[in-house]
Amino acid sequence: MKIVKLVLYILFGLMFINAGLNKFFNYMPMPELTPAQLKFFTAFASISWLIPLVAAVEVIGGILVMIPKTRALGAIVLLPVMIGIFVHHLTVDPSGIVIAVALMAINILAIVDNWKKYEGLITD
Image (cartoon, rainbow, N blue to C red; front, side, top):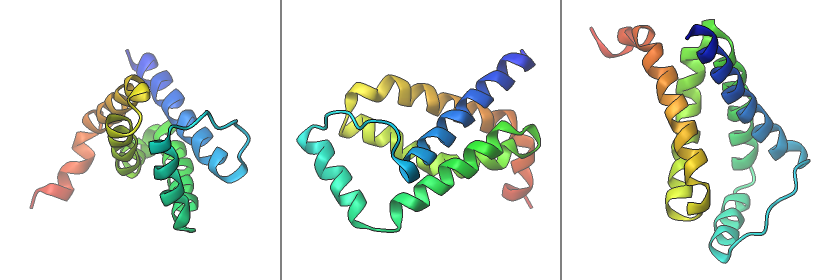
């Protein structure tokens, strides 16, 4: 089971690294956007620092989650991005909800697996 989780976390991290690097270098083609998606991404892009910030968080979080010693930090770093992805697919682009749910489940699994590392933050 440890090997399965390790492979899962590495793939999860690689997906975020890829997504973040794509925001910097635009090497993957953009799919056809619906009017709602176009409106969302136009608003997102109008804040010049937001996309590079999300990209950096995705790359850093992806790297952190792949390393067992830093996985707890990586899971927490990626959680706000993952919530944004989940809510986006829930409200704007339902076609990607299956992948969003799977990624959210992996993120939550990483948090649950590392819960002992967070206990000092929430207890006296």
